[in-house]
Amino acid sequence: MSARDYAEWRPASNPWLITVAVMLATFMEVLDTTIVTVAVPHIAGSLSSSNDEATWVLTSYLVSNAVILPASGWLAVYFGRRRFLIACIVIFTLSSIVSGAASSLEMLVIARVIQGAGGGALQPISQAILLESFPPEKRGMAMAAFALGVVVAPIAGPTVGGWLTDNYSWRWAFYINVPIGVLAILMIRTFVEDPPYIREARPGKIDWIGFIMMAVALGTLQVMLDKGQQDDWFAATWIRWFAFISVASLMAFIFWERRSKEPIVRLNVFRNRNFATGTLLITLVGVALYSAITLIPLFLQTLMGYTALESGLAVSTRGLGALITMPVVGFLTTRVDFRKLIGIGFFLVAASLWVISDLTLDISIWHIAVPSVVTGIGLSMLFVPLATVAMGTLTQKEIGNASGVFNLMRNVGGSVGISLLTTYLTRHSQANQSILVSHLTPLEPAFQQRLNEIQNFLAVRLGTAGAYHKAQHLVYNSLLVQSQLLAFVQGFRMLAIDCLICITVVFLMKRVQPRGSMSAH
Image (cartoon, rainbow, N blue to C red; front, side, top):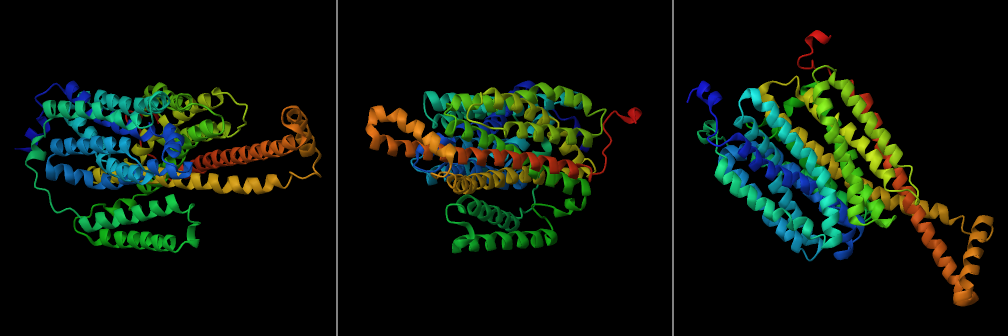
């Protein structure tokens, strides 16, 4: 076929039926990045693990999801895009069943790794199918439908996950993928077809050596981050070995990719200042975004006693803010310097996280829900403009590879951020406890007064001796709660500072002219 025939090719099925088919797969994958966040305390209790260990369920998914991204384009050409997409959904759905049936944390983490690998290619392949299913003049509507699905899923995820966890079990947060996955497979088999250039493609050899080195570097890094707190970090010999293997694999990967004729990641895109800076920023966005949506349910459920559904509703308002603002952002991107939108977005996210950090044990759910709306507004001003600026000065040939790297680093940032923040919470809860306990002495009038009040209240029921011991126990429990509360405050403020630092980095990028704005400047 000629280039003109390729350009004019259109699928036999109605493009909107294709949209529904591929958006089911995308919705399911995006849903799974947030639906489990509210179930972490329940998973920890059910599988006899701590909260920081239970977050491995989130981080393992993100890392394996990220590793598969750079290879997804080649695999789609090699196996056929339709066939590969169906295979990914089958892997994702079957691993969801295993995740729901897991009898131990180790089994659940392994199932999530497989699930993440199956889900890694769903978004980019779905997006490519949508773009090619519509004529050029209607691709804006196609991308609006795609963006709507990507935004609605994070709104629904925590709420649906919370409702299922409270009314049934956390296991149903995984089982819910089964009917969606089956319906997606049936619709894709019926309506989706490969374009001629995919059917006639002759893929070259995949860079398996580079792929394996990248997987080893990221995998050992994640295991080290997940279990480092448990084994006292570099005091453990195996942690030192994993750190060495991770760094050595990363250096070998860079060396190999720079010399490979067909590298899995073309590192020369990092010579582009906009892309290098944009990739750094999306990594930091991943740190702030995924850490925040993990910390908020943990705080609400472990310290405030909220149900999974209530904490899910509080987190879901973030997606609501993004949904409301997205059409406005689409209008502004044709008239305003992208860097200004990104800077405002970072400021709004930082401000909302700082407001959330003003925590006490007397706050209402609105203290979390309202700032989360602002977080969503800020994020909607970040994602599309940041991707546009990062890849706006690359050639058409470079964009496919760069997009995979860009999304990979967002996931890596999220995984690293969750691991570091949960470690930070544990360490600083202990540090805060050692500071606060120094005030629990008979020489502290406030402590002695509070202890006497509790003793007098309990003495009627427990007697003098029983009241004394029970009062000390209650005061110490209160100290533990306050220590954890302070750690959450410090954690949210660190994320806010992370976003403020990002504002200073934004303007290192060159300006990319907004479409349709030539007359505006």
